[in-house]
Image (cartoon, rainbow, N blue to C red; front, side, top):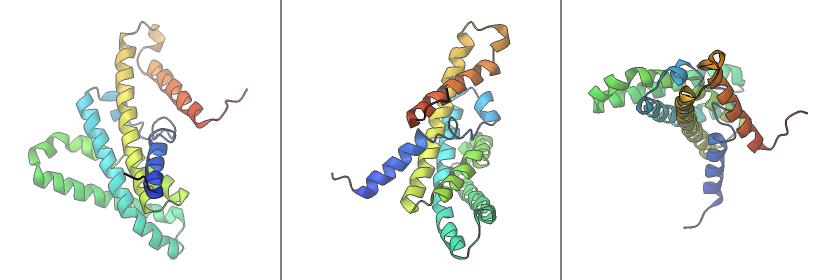
Length: 200
């Protein structure tokens, strides 16, 4: 199988969104309650799959609207309203499909799915892709990479939180403060991958 430049661009943008521009560690998106309160790995995985579906679906729908609105010279701030409407449309379509195909499964994941649709990572990934001026393939790759990266980050935080609960930390650091220290160290390690030097 020959790797074409198009495939290489798709995968490089996706890897960029997964690692160096991770929604949680680099962009501080999706740091809502669900990230810190949910302990079930299964629920977090469902949350991640739903986020991935939302970011990819929204990217597919937003791209043609963005091209049209750029041609009529809408600035990015005005376009944001249309981007939110596109995200809502993707949420409604996916919600309808899941409700029709598997109603009992939908009832079980309804709250998780709603939280993933109204997540800052979905809107943030669209805005970042628009501001970078990506083409359709890169737009979809960035949406897919954002979802996959967020899923990995959420699971990494959950595993880290379990390990931190077993550690013997001082009482003042137990819980959320220690989790923030853990997140900061992870963020700095990803920041180091970019190649920036910390100020001395």
